[in-house]
Image 1 (cartoon, rainbow, N blue to C red):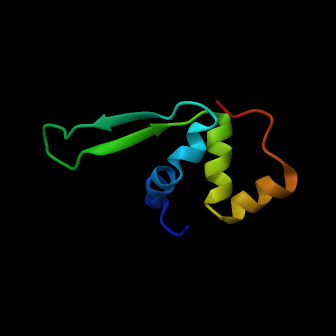
Image 2 (cartoon, rainbow, N blue to C red):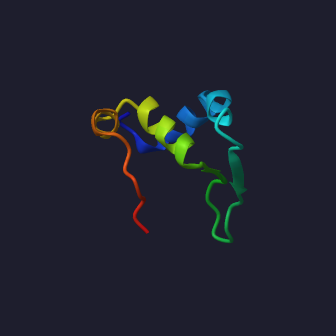
Length: 75
């Protein structure tokens, strides 16, 4: 995946698979007082995030497959 913005398209395209691991929360953002485009935020649980990582087919996804997911997320 060359464009990080494509992650939303990836999530939308695999929503059924992601929802097998729980609800996918979606938040629509409105434009601010200065304008701009409205956006969409997706909130994923750990299993959903790992699935998106794998489906993205990036170098980091390969590392996750080879070494397993991290045991903790940094705060």
